[in-house]
Length: 212
Length: 212
DNA sequence: CGTTGTGAAGGTCTTCACAGCC
DNA sequence: GGCTGTGAAGACCTTCACAACG
Figure 1 (cartoon, each protein chain N blue to C red):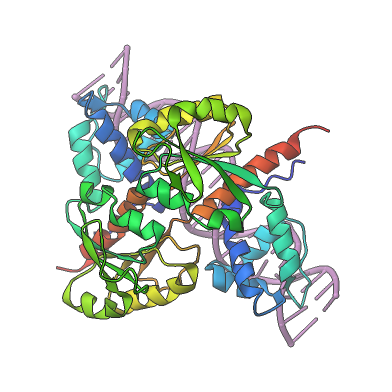
Figure 2: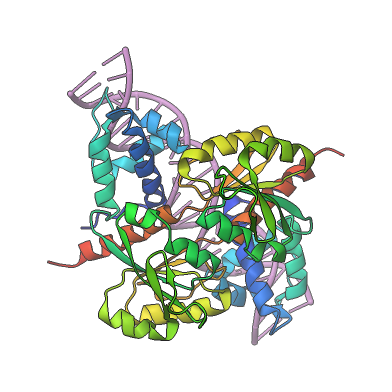
């Protein structure tokens, strides 16, 4: 299947999906214009994005919400289930371990890891925290699709290397670091301070524009 | 100052800054090639990005790390301090309230809010949790630069509206929702499930390519 | 000699605008 | 009539490649 969807489109599909789930409580059909308004994009964008999934709209009417949801879930691979491990259970990792959004989208947390002896053996969100040194052991027994790195920046690359060595193909990185991994492994960064700094750029560039 | 930096560049500047902070422990100077390797981008990209800040490199040598850090901080507005409020102190909001990265970059958390009576009045990360109904009152007494929305999706738009009405210009949104705000207000989304779904797209599109 | 700064080329993404269809 | 699907245009972003320079 050479049906590759442009990156920019892929990044919007989860947004559309969520909007459709919301909408489905109120309507069964929706136009590209409506979806665009809710998702905060241009309607031509929506139509072009959806056309990569194959054309499932009806001219003069719009899209059937239920069908479109199904298409999106299929395109994003959400009809399968995925297993997840969380590395590092400090404040953020603990919060993630209890995050209800995993279940809701078919992700199953299979293990938590940390290096802190005070945390190892404790239960968080229904899972026992294991020693990080047991990572390889655990990954040899269970298939893990996604590793979530919630360690301090200093430990992130090491942990990522070990995940990669153990065959994990996807990493969600909360540490404020760029991870270096083979091309075959996909990583996404979710870094609070980077995003804050992008906001401060705009805050300050506005105040610069103020005439003196 | 019509010195506007392209969006794509602005998004990379925080990454460069962090890389330079790391590097500064080991060296005083660095080439675009080196910075590019660490930041995971092309070296021409680095040079072009940095050229928007004005040209501060030395041919044949590279950039002085300390100077470049200073330029980046200035461009991102980090020489000023910013005040932050956190809306919603569930798992995620609580974790954020204790996040050391705020202080490190000059952000000051000035208040936490929640609707849950069991949480109101408790202390988290050295701050007392206030009733969300006191939001307007508080914002009329203190200038707040950035609102961090860590509420459930269902409350996010309401909270955002109230922040905007109270004059907050920047919002960091952890709720899995697209916020609708005036153009003058900047928002950034940091949504775990969106990012996970982008990862699953790649996981599944690979397995599709496997010849049958 | 090594590295920057940048014009030009090449991609990718977004938006327009309208034919085609229900 | 209303809305989709899409070619074409335009905006934006990245990469190349090399002159300029310390």
